[in-house]
Length: 175
Image 1 (cartoon, rainbow, N blue to C red):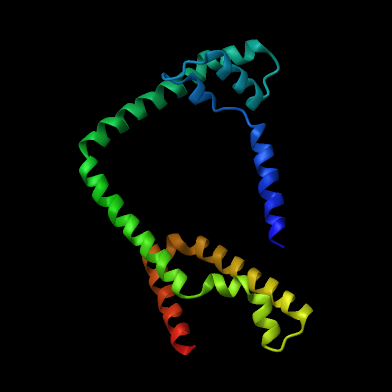
Image 2 (image 1 turned 45 degrees about the vertical axis):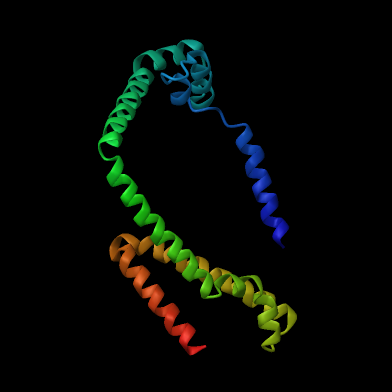
């Protein structure tokens, strides 16, 4: 069962090998690989001739690259000004992310998902039915995840986090 995800990951890996390099990265000031950037543009946009690629490169693409360079330089200047504040913010965000991961592990969520067929069969459900209930559990989890992603901008991350943690705490107390 776990091998199915390995097949999808391998397929993604091999398909990504055929992806072209980013033309903006190739034409950037650190690389300056113009011909490779044009070849990548030709492959991405499926231009029919080299003249079309050159016209696009000379008229539009150089503007895109120069705006990326300007944006990068502005980001570098802002980064040096607010480096201390950035580290404070990253420390706070990292602490929250690590704390949430630790709390998530305490709830036993991964154990339930990994051993769901065994749990269902030990609860008296038949072998075939336990697999069906495990699939149903995955579908419910998927649907709830989609709903949360859809409503996160309406309710906000903090409210959804607090409600989720509250429900988690209630369910752990009931166990």
